[in-house]
Length: 157
Image (cartoon, rainbow, N blue to C red; front, side):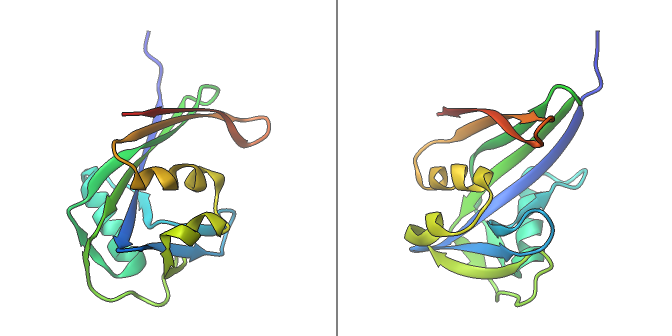
């Protein structure tokens, strides 16, 4: 028996410069707060190509040498949805920051100050893992009734 599963893929790429990371100060729609650059992967581009493109579109920077850090996945069995976010980090970039990104103003933030910023709990939950050895996998069940994250499982490798 085969069921139709709705797959969607996104990327996030954390750009690091010594003791700072580049975040977007996003203040529109329902997804307010500080977020790393990222977005939907367009078919047929690769996940890395999608991450590179999104960073360029949202910040103006050209990134390279992306390091895979992990997956953040939402599953919704009631709707047969599976949304997967591929997470990367890089220290390699060139170019100038754009001032007015439609996704939010790009700003450099000291790493030790990041946890004090307003951000979605999904981002706050995984951000520290970008700076640890190994990779991570979060699986989050979506709670339709409350329209929020339900059970969260973390696996590290």
